[in-house]
Image 1: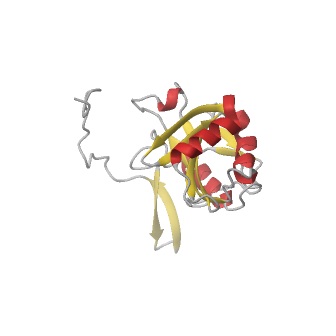
Image 2: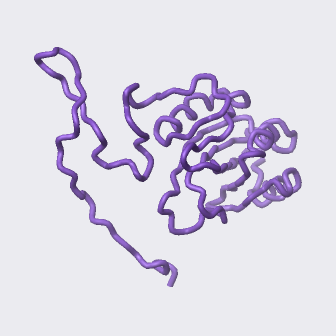
Amino acid sequence: MRRHPAQLIEILRAVFGERITHLSEDFSEVTLVIGKSDYLDVMKTLKGAPELQFAELIDLCGIDYAGYNNDPNGLEGKRFAVVSHLLSLEFNCRLRVRVFAEDEQMPSVPSIVDIWPSANWFEREAFDLYGILFDGHPDLRRILTDYGFVGHPFRKDFPIQGYVEMRYDEEQKRVVYQPVTIEPREITPRVIRDDKFGRE
């Protein structure tokens, strides 16, 4: 039998109490926001507690909130977050867990690989694309970009055209890197809406 989001919210409040930074239901899915210091303990409880049993980690990704107009859940000034999507087969329900990195210059959160081994490549992807470090990860290295890649391409301050381009050089008979030769261009015009757009 499927557990209703309202029931899940009640259980989460009872289990975690003051450790919850934010708890809400959107589109029939519950979002739990917790602090970095409670992250590992909360995740272990979510998996192991008999009344929760979130046995499966479906997905984990990074988020860059730079330039975000609306304050994400009352955490003013926090730029990088990690979001995990969990599934409880026992209670047929899903949960979204968000944790914010404290330091924008060197964002980091604890690794959950020891809790859900499937987090391994997800965390490597978030490190590669956003530069989020995962403390305790057994093999934190790039997974999608090249070893010599500079920067993290999903960060909002990463230039659209990148820093370098690669091509095959006939004379050297290998792939070479060179500075970007394309002209920056705006493909889609930027639309600026006022704060009340869509609310009236």
